[in-house]
Structure formats: structure tokens, C-alpha cells
Image 1 (cartoon, one colour):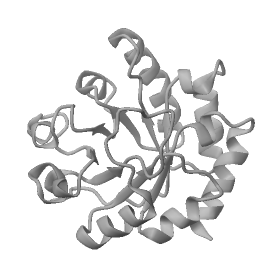
Image 2: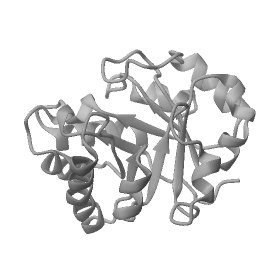
Image 3: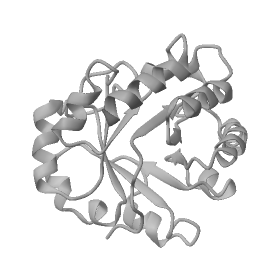
Image 4: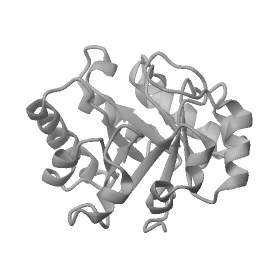
Length: 211
């Protein structure tokens, strides 16, 4: 079951810390102007109050550009700002539980998988897209189990019709390979947030995806 089509190609995962002292809302806006078409706010180390404040700032921007804002693993924040959806991993609230919540039942639900066996479970069944993380090892996500690689994406693509969002040390030099392997969408953190020119970085990534 998937309630939502997932037509997005370039997915920005952002936190204030990832922007290295720059205004994260401005970085997000530059990314949107460069071609990002969906954004996830991931604030693992923020207090609940700070997370909500940042989410309110960001959703004002994403609504201006009609870009979906996904909240990482915070049900309360997702509800309070009426986010487009929520993204969870194996140690977070399961998608089956999220689907039962009134304010999330019709929202986009993303689910990160770590094992091929998860493709057959009920959590995958009720999710709108699958996060394939990491494709390649990355310093921004250190709590993962599997490094999928291109062959891993190819294998997953053969086993599911779910939209696949690939993340993990992806940049303009390897983005096309990841798409060719079977990913529907590329998600990045440092390739945009850490770039000197986030708009240019997003533009280059998008060009790699669509060419």
C-alpha cells in the first residue's frame, strides 16, 4: 500500500549543524532554487522546542515554493506544523503505528531499510518510499548497518516496486550511477549543505539525475 506517488528526484536532508554556521533556511532556499524538490528536517540533537522552532521556520519557506517538508522521527513536530510527511528508521516509531495516527494517516511516510528481509515486512508495505542508507559510507550517518553500494540498489530494485531514495556519500560525480542502478531519487546532506554555493551544487546534482 502506498498512498502517495513519489515524483521527487532530488531530496535534501538538512539540519542547522550541517550548514556549518550559515543560516539553514537560506541554504534550503538556495537548494530549492537549484533544483531540490523535497526537504527533510533532521535535528537529532536539538531539544523538542528548538526542533519545532526550526521546523516552523523551514515550513514557511517550503510552502512558499510548494516543496514538501518531511520531518525526521518527530511525530509531535510533524503534527504541529502539518508537515507533508515523516521519515523513520528501524529504531523509530514504526510506519504501521504512524498510519494509525489521525494526523499522519494520509501523510507521506518514508522508511529506511537496513536488511533485504525488510522488503517483505508490513512496515515496508505501508510506507510511501524506502530510504536506502547508506549507499556509500558517510560521516553524517554513523549508526547504519549495511553499506549497500550500487549492487545493493540493483538488488533492491529487483525485489520491490516501492520508490527508492538513495543516500550516503552521493555527489555530482556518482549521482548518475546511483540512478542507473535503480534509485528513483537522490538524497544528500553535505553535498549541498557543505557546498560553497548550495544553489550551484543542487543544480549540478539535478542535472546529473535528469540527463
